[in-house]
Length: 406
Ligand SMILES: *Cc1c(COP(=O)(O)O)cnc(C)c1O
Image (tube, rainbow, N blue to C red; front, side, top):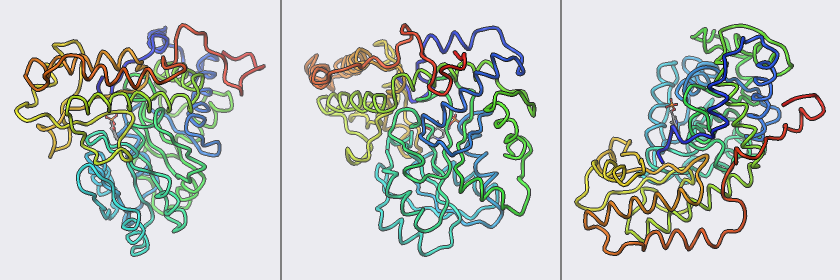
């Protein structure tokens, strides 16, 4: 129960473990093509161009920046934590001038502040972290994206800890670029960097004057490859991560099978059950209010008298949680990831383990109060809370039906 890598479906692991195919094998061409299409479906961005390469989320961030930023460009960074700091570092390395808009720890900047910043400078781009994994802060994206669109400023969304679990309508909300990785809510072991570039972003890339400062990251190298596989043909620039892409194909079919609306709802319900348990144990969340709390992870302050060894005590109770990540919070917080396959049973097991650890340290007096609080919320929910069930055969995505796919 950490915020990545998470637990993965057995079917996804099976796909990863199958014999490695050639990158020109017809079966692989089908899998890659379908994965590219499913990625657009998951993000609701039919007109966007996907790029999926070997790497991690950080590479996806750098790929977007390398292609869209030219030396001297001004960028507004809405800074909500550790991964916004990383974005600043990447932007600076590529010659941009980032201006940071920081909110107090656990909070997000007010929309008026963003608006006055956006109108005061000549920004080419604004970067936003959908969920910051160091603070558990969820940035309400929709109004900020609308604002940038009105100002003609490109938007880059870091969705690494959100894509596949938090509500995100890329095209409807007007986001220009989304970057994400495989090992969080997309449900595939670490190894894939994913970028979705909408029409405005692709136009900005085409109109750039200086060459992209990296061969491996250049859209120009990858665009023909992604277009070929999406059209059912093989093409080569650099060897694709064949097994990971086969696993991604299975995982994204799984997500779409569950349905994004159901899936985001499931993550929300589990987050609500966990919040009830945190309250019952007197654990304070880092985010300042429910409206800025992520549904993919919880960042919680350690009670007085407990230190960073708390995660190990919870592990002794049978559940793995994460320590703090943000420099200012590292020794004062712990984090619980609740993404992908997480079920109601996982929620209860996690709350139980944390409650037992707190009982043993004398920070909770009565056994079962937190489990009861979580259970109370879970029992008000009707419907499927199991997530994608590998035991149920996958159905082919709509675009492949009748084409002899899957
Ligand atoms: C995990 C994470 C990253 C970094 O991804 P890596 O795969 O570790 O490189 C970037 N941004 C956010 C919001 C993350 O949660």
